[in-house]
Amino acid sequence: MSDKRILRTKKILKQTFMNMLSKKTFEKITVKSICENSDISRITFYSHYDDKYDLVNDISEDLINSAQKEYQKLQKDNNPEKNPITSYCNFLDCILNIYHDNFNFFSHTNSYENPYLNFSFYKYILKYLEIHTKKRSKTLKPKYNIKKIAGFLCYGLLGFINECQAQKNDINTVKKEAHSLLKDILKYNILTDVSQDVKI
View: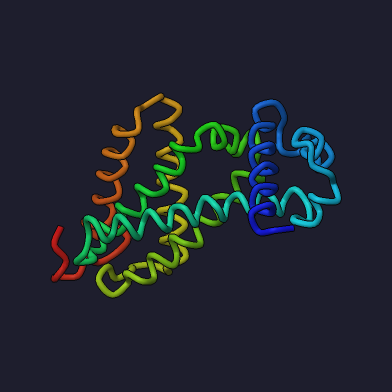
């Protein structure tokens, strides 16, 4: 199968799965039902994925890869001096944009409705936030273990975002308030000590 056909097949399987979430929970979705709804054989499905969990991991990786590309662009456009606090805000914007642009999917990934999906996506964010925190540890010296700081920021901010969505705040309001919260956490030395040469 050519690369284009492989990409097309995977795209159909992913989209079919995400559409099915509006009708069924993750636990009730089977490989058989994904194949029936996408009109793709199980043999073809298993030539690309081990199971539905592997499919979810591929979706999560797609979203994170998209966020990484956007992050690099934001850094180039508005943070050439690599200010660490601006870097964190750019990272946050990428996560918010993914959440907003794929809201039909994320509206079904809460911990009550689909706990596995909730965990799957957040573990990717946590992984990259940990890497991000480690890279900036020279100018934002961590007061605690980097894994603990990444965990606090990841689950705290995502919880804040979820509550904003529940209150039907528009994306600009969410960004403004989340930025303000993140900046306060970073610049008031709650989790880190800000280096003297960092402009805030």
